[in-house]
Each structure stands twice: as C-alpha cells, then as structure tokens.
Length: 117
Image (cartoon, rainbow, N blue to C red; front, side):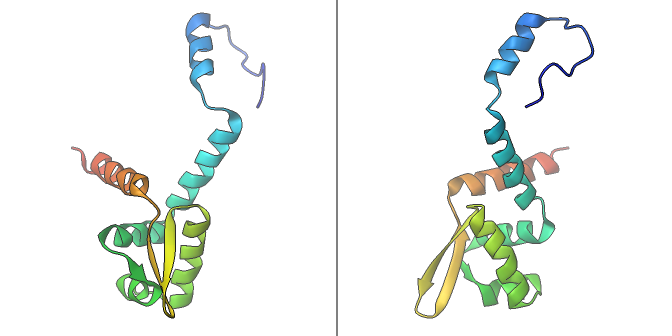
C-alpha cells in the first residue's frame, strides 16, 4: 500500500485515522476487487441471474442465453473459481447453482439499487 503520497494538509486527523483503522487490509480489498470484476461481465451476470431462478445444466443455460455450450462452460469456470457458483454431478450431467445466499443477496440488492427512482 502506498504511504505518504497525499500532497495536501489534513483537515481532520482524528477522522482520517478512524477511517484508516476501519478499512480492510489491502489483500482483502484486492480480493473484493477481483470478485467484483468477475461479476461485472454482462454474460456472467446473465448466468448468475438465471441461476437465481433454478439450478441448471450447461445445455439449459446455453439455451437461455442463446450461446454455445463451450462459451457458457468458459464463463461458468470463471464463476466457479471465484466461488460465485457451485456444481454437482448427477450421472453425466453437471448442474450449477449459486454458491450461497450471499450471492443472491448481492444480486438482489444491486438490482434494487439500479431500479430506484
């Protein structure tokens, strides 16, 4: 983390220290940044929103998004590695779902924020 780069005089040093003390460590901020970057892709958002509705296999997701199975699989891998989706196998078919309720809450809060008037 960069130190002593600000070229201006502090107005409220107590407030500044309080805010600094409350910030997560730099590694946590970097992990959050990476998490949000993965979610920032419109295709991945469509996949996540589809999985909000139901657990689905790659073929069904490909049909919902009108994409190839290969393209969907590629995006699902990124989502799985970022712990946004999980998979389970039933015979030869792999089903995907949101990793946990936090992902659903993040999506719901984000939609609510965008739709505010």
